[in-house]
Length: 196
Image (cartoon, rainbow, N blue to C red):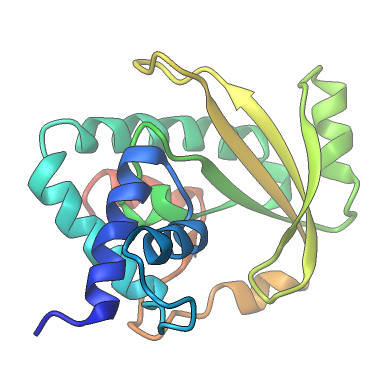
């Protein structure tokens, strides 16, 4: 049965894949594009992710796996560089729905909130600082770096989100479907090698 939420999810999925939008903005834009009432119930992120997977399987099966592999390889490079700060990959690159338009999201769990930033400065890495909503709803600093990704014509943004070390314990809880919402370097290696 095709519901309004399914229609919104399908339209949002197309925007996520073709334009690189995040789920929230894609859902709101899909609502407008479909001419629906602003009070219409939006689909959950899980519904949008399912629609993204369907879209990728239908329209991007020949390109998306290679793009995902390239993004995961770049994520591994940055996780290795930032290893002292307990990096965990999250978002579309972790979940397997990333395309060449996707950003890489790494969550760092630090003893000192400024230590990761000092490390970037010491290594001459240029970055932008912003504040984003963390996985528990709190405001966290994000250090964004524009990087070259082998095989991509455009650069990719790598976002390093800075968390307190104590947040790591809660970060490893599985989601409602029993999946881990993030993974460390060894988990990413296992994922890339096809070990479940």
